[in-house]
Length: 296
Image (cartoon, rainbow, N blue to C red):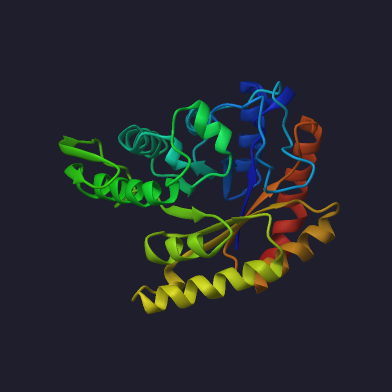
């Protein structure tokens, strides 16, 4: 099982020095990957409930939030091995050709080290302030994924769909990874399962229990088989908080492994974590946790 971490992205650690220190420490500790979340703007007036914890987002409106692709581009230039990912990129808030070019550029400049979890999004008010329709976002994302995959495979193409329609364009250079970076489908429900099984390179869940992860994996595998896709060629991934102690983290990761999860992205801390907490957690992962996990 591959293990990565979320990079600091808001608050006092949303600086070049802190982000690069954590990213380089993760690479030196032989972690597999570093990941960022995605927000473009923080609507001050919002009625939409945060879906991942009852207390609301772990960041405030005044914390700032580093833009995902820009942050990964800086990290790509300071590292050479660790993979780069999004957990998750809200694709329907973006114009598809711009997203296609930005993600392909990041793959080129990182020498093929990218994987992108993409999702339909949850924050209606954020869609509103960036002038992207919230309703119909899943349908648009399906079309966007088709555009990404066609562009990354062929480079020169046209698209005529219900949401996007354009004549032949060149979207070059092609990504370093043949066919483009892996696209994992983010989301915790039946629509996301079907999308992952039908068009994704895997599934990326956020904040689910082990039982829910096992259930989602089984459902995706069953759908993939009915569609003629090999479920074992899909990546099953999740984002999870890091436990309080190394032994608890080993136990939790072992449970994910037993549930058929291939990749775990650990949240080391919230915006109030300091660099010492990140370095201590990374050292524990590299020196104790990953060697025990490898033994399994």
